[in-house]
Every structure is written in structure tokens, then in C-alpha cells.
Length: 274
Image (cartoon, rainbow, N blue to C red; front, side, top):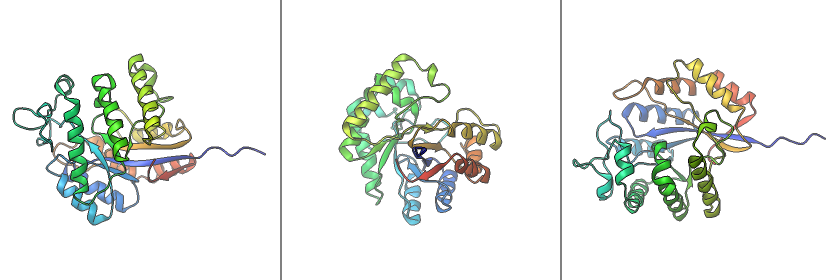
């Protein structure tokens, strides 16, 4: 008798809810259409209160998009705590990752995480997991911030978006040995702390010149997903100030029948969480 193949599942996540009004509208609509499994909410933007209110009204609960750095092409984002290392002179979050790497105080980062979680809970939203807003932060302080974040997640009973496996996706073989070491240590720590992780992450890199190109890239990645529950990370939005065009194409993809057919053909089931 042929052994049954291990099941592969995929959480389809819309990132950056609350980044801008166009993104909020699109992500809420995709949730109502059943085309996403989860969303990550920013708590430090001008749009954050409106995004949180719309989530409550729609009956959707997001994950917490932990944020320590703003985006240069958008209105300033402001910390919810008092940490001096998190602020520029005008009180806004820095948009310079090098400055953050030099000056970030880890205790102040954890205090900011506490404030962002409290902000969500104060609005009736209970996240089950967290993520960093920018992947550059995973490597800050040679893994010290990542370790502090995993311990913070364990204290609050949250999962964390860190792929359990970085292989065999294209590009990971070029990662420095030190980065691979940080990742391996973080995965072992998450296991020891009981912090749930996705099996792998599926996303795209670059401008994705067309929906066809985006679909081709992601469909090829489906074959590489390991057994267990992985995560597709998208940033859907619509035309608006400070919205990169690729985010509009990601919205089109999530509404594209050929993409969902490819997911079914790969034998991958959509899941709500990992």
C-alpha cells in the first residue's frame, strides 16, 4: 500500500493593514471575500485606528505587525511608548535602518512591543501571532532583537513569523554563514519556548512586472513548500499616495482564478493559522 503523503497547508496573509487607506479597504474586502486567511495590523500609523475599527466591524482578527521603524514616503509613524532610542528629534520613528541598528535599546523595544499589543487589546482585538514590519529587523544586533522578541512572544502566548526552514528556496544558499546561524539558533529557541512558527515562507522579491509574472513566480514556489503549514506573505493594496504599483498586482493575484487553481493542483489546502 502506498504511504499517504504528508499534508501541506498555506496561510494566505495580507501584510501591512493600517499602512494606508487604500490598503485597509482592499485587505478588509479580501477578508470578506474569503481570499486571505490572516492580516497583520500596524498600530503606529495615522490609519491604524480606522483599520482596527473596520476589523472589528468586519469580525476579522489580525496578527500584530510589530513596528520599530517608519517608511520615508508616508506620513510619520510614532511610537506608542516613551523610549528615546525609538524616536527622531521630531518624535517620529526613524526611517533609517542603520540609525535603528546603532541606537536601538532592546529594553525599549520590548516596552514598545508591550504598548502595541496593549493598543490592539484595548480595541477588542486579540492577536494569535506577531511579525516584524521589516525583515531587516530580524538581523539586528546579531540576533539579539530576534531572541528578545521570541521570549516576548512566549510570555504573551503568541506565535511568530519566522520560517522553520529557509531551504530550499532560491537565494537562501547565498545567505552568509552568520545569518544561517542566527536563524538556526532562533528556530531552536522558539521550539524550546513553545512559540509556533510557520514551516516556511512563500513570497516574491522584486517589482513583479505583471500578474502573470507574479503568478509564475509563486506557483513555482508551491512545489518547494515542505509538509506542515507554511505562509504566503502578500501586501495587497490599490492605487494611492505612497503605494507601490506591485501592491496593486498582488491584489489582482489574490483575485486570480488561475492562482487558486494552481494551489489546488499542488494539493495545498488553505489554513487559518500555523
